[in-house]
Length: 588
Image 1: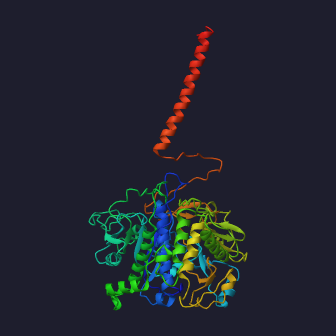
Image 2: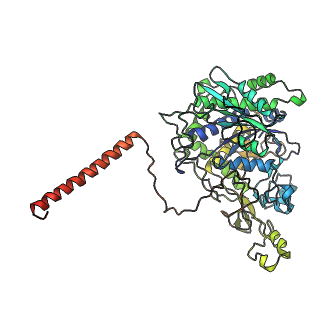
C-alpha cells in the first residue's frame, strides 16, 4: 500500500492488485498449485518489488490513487478472503460491536467500549509519548483496525494462471460493470497497451454479452474480481491478466494434484517475470491517470509507467532494473521456494522477520512460525484455528476467539434469570491484567509474504542508504520511516524497512467466533448471502485416516496387472499342486 499514513482521514481511492494464495485438489495433502497459486504469488510479489525499487514514497504519495497489493486466502472455497476484506472495507463496511449486517442493522454498531489497544500494556503511556498505538475490536474480533482508514476501491487487476502460455500470449478478461463505470475499460486498455516484442496481450474472445451470476454482463474466470463485482452490484470494475483465452490451457491441471512444475510440464518463468512487469506498469499508469484533474491522457499515463518501471527478467544477465541488479536472483530464489521447496531459507528468513514483528504486536508473546508450506509446497488452506490463522484475544491469561466479558454481564442485568449466562467471563480487557493482548499466528507462507511486501515496498527512499539490522531495536533511529503512521522494522533481508503490510481475517462471512468462548468455536451470523457452502472439517486424531494411492499413469496399470498376474499364477500353481497330491493319496 503506497498510502503511508494509515491514519490519514483523506485516504485516496485505491487500485487493487489481487490474487489467491491457495489451491486445492482431490487430495488435500497434495495441492501443489504451481500455476493456480505459486505463479500468481510470484508475479504479484515481483510487481511489488518493481514498484518499490523504482518509486520512492514521495513519488507514490503524489499520485492521485493508491496501489494496494492483496493476497487472498481461501479463494477456492467461496472467495472467503476477498469477500471478507471487501465487506469490511466498503460493503457495507466493518462495524465494531455489530453483528456483521452493517451499521443500519446493528443496535450496538460502533461500540467504542469494544475498540481497545491491540496491546494493553502501557498503551496510555505510549500514546502520551507520541507513539503510534494500533487498536483492535473485541467483537467481532479484528486484531488490527488499520484497514478502516483505507480509501475507496476504484477497481481491481487480478492475475490468474500466467505460468503456462500458448504462443507467448496473455489475455485480458474485462468486467464492464455498470454502464456509467469505465474503470474496467481503462484497466483493459492499459493492459492491452503493454504488449511487447516478446509477449502479446489480447482481449479475451469470450462472449462479452453472456450473462453470469454477478449480473455484470460478462463471463469471468474465478478470481477475487468476482467478489468486487458481486458486492458492488457492478458499480466497480476491473480486469484479469490471464494465461488463457476463453478456456483454460489443455495442460492446466486446474485444481489438481498434477498442477506441478516438472520436466514434462515446466512453467515459463520468463512469462511470470513479464506478467510482473505488466502488472506493475498497469497499476502505476492507473494510479497516475486522473481524468478529473488534468491527467486524463492515457498515452501519457502509459509513457509514465514505461519510463518508471523497467523490464524484469528472471535472468540476471538480461535484467534491466538498474537499482537492484539482484532482482533476477531474488526472482529465481522465490520461484524455487514457491514451486519446489516451501521450507527454503528465503521464506523462513522472511517468515521469522514477520514472526518478530508479530511478537511485538502480540504483546511479547511468541507463537512461533506458522504452519509450513511444505516440501514440496502444498497450497491447501487447512483448517482455521488458533494454530492456523485464527486471531484471538488474551484476557487475564485466558484465550478467546472473541470477547464481550464484563460488557456482556452488564447487558444481561435486565435479562431473566433463565437467560443469564453465569459462566460468562467478568473481566474487562486491560484492567485486570497488563498482559491482555490480541494474538495471531498466520501460516509460514502468509508470514513470508507479509515480510516480503515490507521489504519490497518499505524502503522509503531509493536514494537513501538503508540501515542494516539483526533485531528490531536496531531500527528505532532510522530517518526514512518518518511519515505519520510509519514504523521502522527489521526486514527479512536484514535491512531496516518501513512497515507496509497488514494481515486481515479470512473467515467465511457466514461464520464468526463465538464471544467469550475458546478458539476454534464458531457460530452462524445473519450475514450469509449464500455465496459459499461454509466448508468445515472435523478434528481428526493423527492416528485416524487413510493413505491414498495417487499414482496415475499407464506404467502404473501395467505394473499392477503384472503383480496381479503373478499372485494369481502362484495360487493356481498351488491349487494344482495340492490337487495332484490329493489324487496321489486317493483322497480326491
